[in-house]
Amino acid sequence: MPSPRRLKSPLRPWVVGKANLNGNQKKNVSFLSLARLITKPIQDRECFGRIQYAPGTDKAGCHLFFQPKESIMQKHVIVGCLTALLMFSITSIALAGDMPGPDATAVWKYITKVSPYTKWSYWPDHKGMQKGRAPHGPFHKVFVNKKALNSAKPPVQYGSMIVKENYSPKKELKIITVMYKVKGYNPKDGDWFWAKYGTDGTAMKVGKPKGCIGCHGTRAANDFVVVHEFK
Image (cartoon, rainbow, N blue to C red; front, side, top):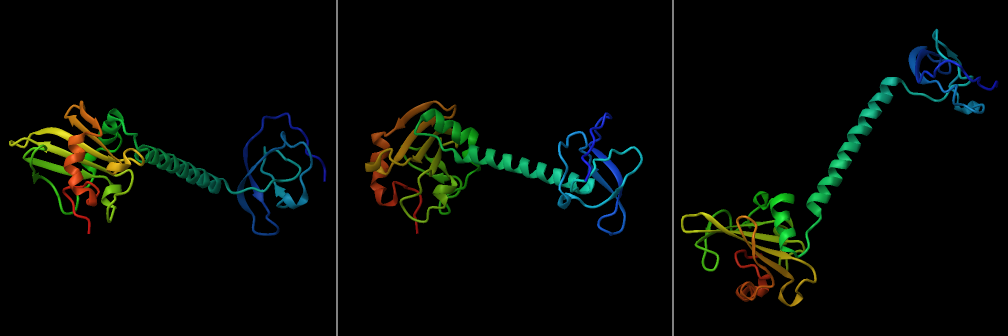
């Protein structure tokens, strides 16, 4: 087999010609012309057969495996879509899956920006606006993330978050309180991180407040959860 010659003309990445594929019917195809890049003869097993070149195409001596241009374009589109989907999935996982540490600022950012708590669910037995009592005010709403909601029995899964909106008698939002289950944070009191915020995100109480732990501690057997009964 003759070695392919180095062409002086510009490389034409895609050229159209008539291909006789091992005796099959001739058809218009697109194939990659690499004559200027090939440095040694190509093995026979890598050849399709003889090509009847269209005028103006560059012969490479032996022909690489090829696919119709339309097929390659479809693959490019599919690969592009899969890549975009993968990047979106990775980004989504990074945003929703990277839980914050037991830090007031990080937790507030998470529940308001990364995974807005208002899009979470209610406990199935404590939905919507409910009557409350001190110190949380006369009305409240309690939102829970998926890890908390999917916990069939106490203790809830690590990463569980419970957010309570506390309302005035006129049902004006006044305070937002958070319970966040963090492994190893406070084992003797259920590993709960506690936070109390103003509506602007100003932290009022953070960490292990004795008042929060003392009140919810009466329900330690229910993993310190007061408003929901696990079945």
